[in-house]
Image 1 (cartoon, rainbow, N blue to C red):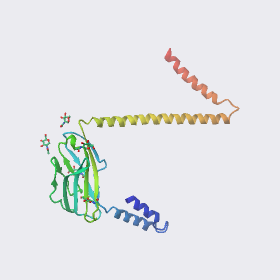
Image 2: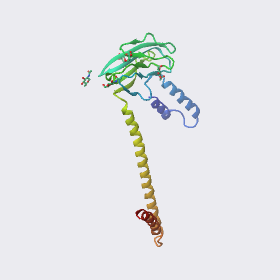
Image 3: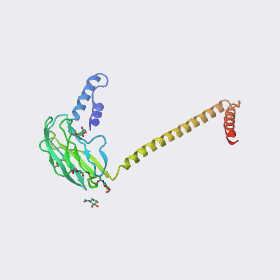
Image 4: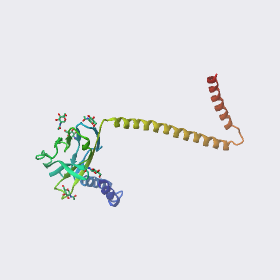
Length: 230
Ligand SMILES: *[C@@H]1O[C@H](CO)[C@@H](O)[C@H](O)[C@H]1NC(C)=O
Ligand SMILES: *[C@@H]1O[C@H](CO)[C@@H](O)[C@H](O)[C@H]1NC(C)=O
Ligand SMILES: *[C@@H]1O[C@H](CO)[C@@H](O)[C@H](O)[C@H]1NC(C)=O
Ligand SMILES: *[C@@H]1O[C@H](CO)[C@@H](O)[C@H](O)[C@H]1NC(C)=O
Ligand SMILES: *[C@@H]1O[C@H](CO)[C@@H](O)[C@H](O)[C@H]1NC(C)=O
């Protein structure tokens, strides 16, 4: 949305050369203003794989340029389509801890702090049934009726062998990629040399230079292989 409105401005905005500075300023200001809506954020990687029995953090932060008053937030668990409330509360203002945070389910602990706009929760001693999609929901009454949600996916495994696998895959694909790159490089190099040789051949059709190169190459490889056999 943000980039869209910025792009829009650039397209239909100010005169091209004359007021570049003021135009830039305008874009900056509107850019900042465009993020005034509430934003819920469950981190750069909203996905976690954890071992059964462990305790996990479900991260969530919020951001709002226009400030908040009575921000309502809740954590929910998507249990086969029906949303089960885990936690909810209201944060009165930007610098007040939330009112009483109500916990709807056992093994859930609210660990948010107003510092950092943090409304994360802990899920203690997870079981396989805890796997699934969690949503962090926020609603700022300053924006009438607008809901904002960020999702976090938890998967529960017996042991963390999968991480080794992904590492192996990463290493394997790195090595594979390097080999592929090398091969491609060699191919391109050889092809270029071939083309260059052809061009040279055409240029010096009367002279017998290109075959001379071939001969030396053959001679070299031949002399290398013969001592090995002997
Ligand atoms: C995790 O699940 C496996 C298989 O059900 C079980 O053997 C193991 O004890 C569990 N670990 C914990 C910490 O609950
Ligand atoms: C969830 O949905 C699947 C298929 O839609 C069904 O097999 C399963 O029993 C459901 N689980 C619960 C807990 O409702
Ligand atoms: C988690 O499991 C440990 C060990 O089984 C137990 O002592 C603890 O009370 C459990 N915590 C919760 C919140 O269930
Ligand atoms: C939120 O608070 C929890 C508990 O204090 C902490 O572990 C987590 O790193 C915080 N998250 C962010 C994004 O600040
Ligand atoms: C926002 O969420 C509330 C539940 O908290 C729901 O009743 C309402 O319909 C939602 N509004 C929109 C516009 O989705």
